[in-house]
Image (cartoon, rainbow, N blue to C red):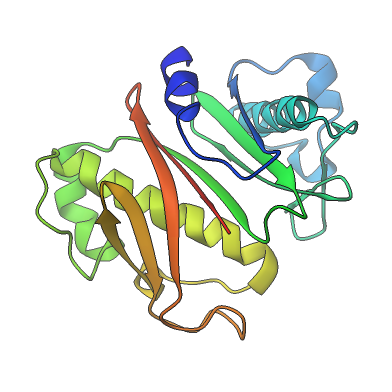
Length: 216
């Protein structure tokens, strides 16, 4: 996890933002008792991922100086951030991460963490993730497709809380500018996010994972 933390420290975040990680491990009894009711009967792995994500969010809020570190869950299952804050949570089987920022510094904020997929899987599902096709790259297919996948996931996680629109991977195209992801909306995602809107993301590859943060 240290390698991920070091890589994340090189990303540009919004003013006043903080990003933190938490290992996903076995869930303690006191933590299990505090889970939302709809997670009480979830698989232990699901519970552990949720708990680690909330730990990462609490650490990020503390690091950003929010004064409130509790993160609730709304009826739509989205995190309920403290007043004046916006954030995003992500997790894999092994590690969770969260990023928070003052609401006055950003309008949207999305974070995604993905383990790098095997090359054979990338070849199989690539047309679904990037129907627009990938530009030639010196990176292995698994790394390049994971970068595209993570970028599109971060975009969706940034826009969904505002637009409440479920979108396919084809709703945005992926490209790179100087190695950094550039996403262009190929559909209208709402009156404030029309087709052709360009959003740039920060991305890091470390410890067998791809981390993407997108904000505006």
